Amino acid sequence: MSIRNRTAAFCDRFGLRVPILLAPMAGASAPALSIAVANAGGLGACGALLMAPPEIVAWSNEVRVASNGRFQMNLWIPDPAPLRNATREQAVREFLGNWGPAVAADAGDTRPPDFAAQCEALLEAGPPIVSSVMGLYPPQFVALLKARGISWFANTSTVVESRAAEAAGADVVVAAIAKAPG
Image (cartoon, rainbow, N blue to C red; front, top):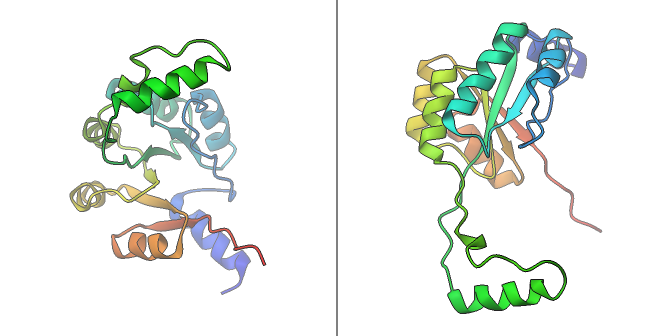
């Protein structure tokens, strides 16, 4: 199949008029931009990494009402909680304080929004597409997406992760694999 035919099939499958997908950048996903991209025939996007569940639902509702409804919402798959070392953290704060403003003693206590609650909000928001980056969604969440007819775009950075995403049920694997120098 030619690239033109594959592109047309992709656009038809996901309700797009043009093969333009807005990147879901956390903190830079203004609804107005996604509305404009969707209404121009592309795919709007929201990087929901830092959003609380009510914000995810509100963003989705705003974009759905003002556009043709073609958008994706993205979450980073969280790493396990890091092991903390108060002595090392103090040393880093002191070092950084030599180069700029003092770092608050509680700076390392910041926690991202609850991932499970964000996943529940994605299901409630019901975007046509969700995407993941920095890992794969848990199998039980993928099953809930599939049951609701929500497509999953898995952003991957290695061949191994790409194959794992396909095996886990990703509808689309978005591979950003860099060639090694040489």
